[in-house]
Image 1 (cartoon, helix red, strand yellow):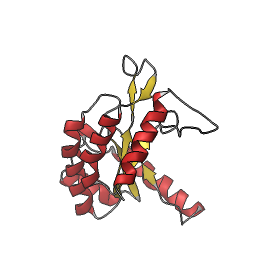
Image 2 (cartoon, helix red, strand yellow):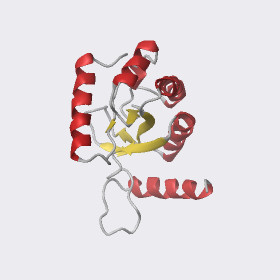
Image 3 (spheres, helix red, strand yellow):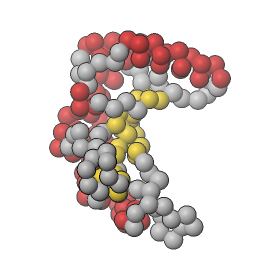
Image 4 (cartoon, one colour):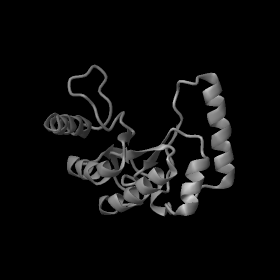
Length: 168
């Protein structure tokens, strides 16, 4: 539910070194275990102490640790904690894959567009940006010179592009 103190110290050491090497770069982590996070006062205090620009929480739908129906509540609580802390921006690291059979032991395949769209709709009110976990092989531009992934990767790309055009 909370970050380990050793992790917070590690983050701050690594962030300080990253800023020393290139002060213009942003620091980001993408922790898993989103469904266990407790965005309470202790969590807010931990956020205040971490030298991070962005936390992109993994939504964990692809690994079947959470469902689309549960996501909004998780991200809403995290969003409130981030606003209260006034520190790191909140992003989502959205899983656009599914497993062919058993989770973790079978091949990754692109998720159906309907699920991906539902994930975006559930998460977007609470985060500044959504990034995707494992774009390569999950989305492939049709006709590209470097086809990658399952044949449904082109369909997921096309569906996303079609949806994106309606958002402008």
